Amino acid sequence: MSGGKGFDQETIQAMMQNPELMAQLQRRMEGLTGKGSGYVESLPKPIQNRVKALKNINREHQALQRQFNQELLALERKFLTLNEPLYTRRSKIVTGDYEPTEEECNYVDSDEESDEEDEDKVVDLDSEGDKEAQDALDEIDVKGIPAFWLTAMQCNPDIDNMIEEQDRECLESLVDVTYEYLAEGEFGFKLVFKFEPNEYFTNTELIKTYHLSDDGTSTELMFERAEGTVIDWKSAEKNLCVTTKSKKQRHKASGQIRMKTSTEPRESFFNFFSPPEMPSEEDIDADQEAAEEISERLEADYELGETIKDEIIPRAVFWFTGEALEDYSDDDDEDDYEDDDDGDFDDEDDEENDGDYEPKKDTPEECKQQ
Image (cartoon, rainbow, N blue to C red; front, side, top):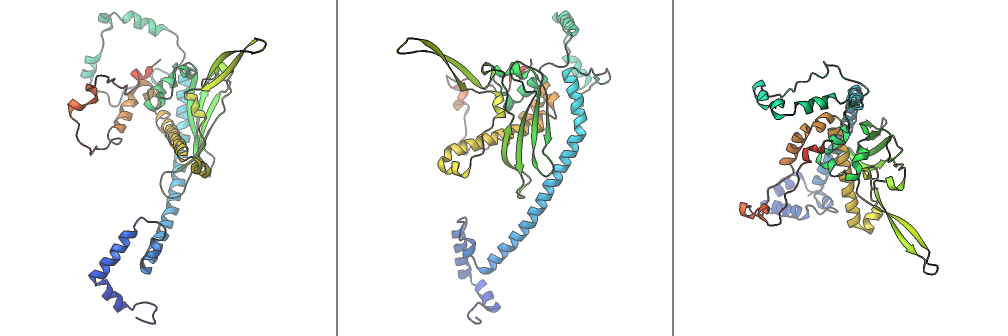
């Protein structure tokens, strides 16, 4: 030992070769693992210094991570710009503003099966007695593709769960769905739902905006908040997000009767444009359970927004036909389930054998095509 301030190198080497001393140090470190405050400070000084070195490395990693997020966003912006003319052409066909040429309609599926198998699937319209009906359908002069976006969204199970019966007529007037990124220097995106004139609200566009932030710790941006367009309902009766109730009230003295109207919230796709606010620290301290519920709703809301941006908009035609549902269902199969260690299930124990079992509808029936 030198000067009472530490150990010389020879002494340190001897201590490190002492199994009992090293085991004691290891037990001490294991006992403190995960205890947070005071853990690092209790470690030997050389280990504390190495931890600081690791933090410096992580600081460099965070700088690279921010650079990655910036460059990734720039790349996404670039390809959105390249895709916009395609989305415009799609919109014109859907709305009937443009009639595709015969050449443009000559589509062959890249995964199409052999001609022989296709021939086996051909329905003989003459034998089925449907040829005349089909010819009559072909003669109907229909503009564009009616209810294109409603049908596409109903094919996605997550979105279909949000669409209530009262929403469908209004959503038939939805003529386009697009997205755009926020201004330079900001993280986030907007979903733009474009409507033709309808009897429910005056808005021509409903916009949902997601604000994100980059903390430099991962490739995933952090959700901050969401906000939506205030819907200008034409009347209380047309507001799809509430139920209007009328009740008779009789005056105790005069006997005069008056009608009192009240509204109650109800489930609707259009609640999507009224997201809850992110709970503050005060809200969390006051009611942690309620704050957690709001956080879960916000997380589900953001995931839905990403689904519309990354799945529905780019592949809308395949959601309309229902083909995209197969890939979407496959993605959910294995990753969303984990093995149950409580024991194996026998066929006899399956809930399908219960007397009151009712099978659940896994996917929208025929995508509820209009």
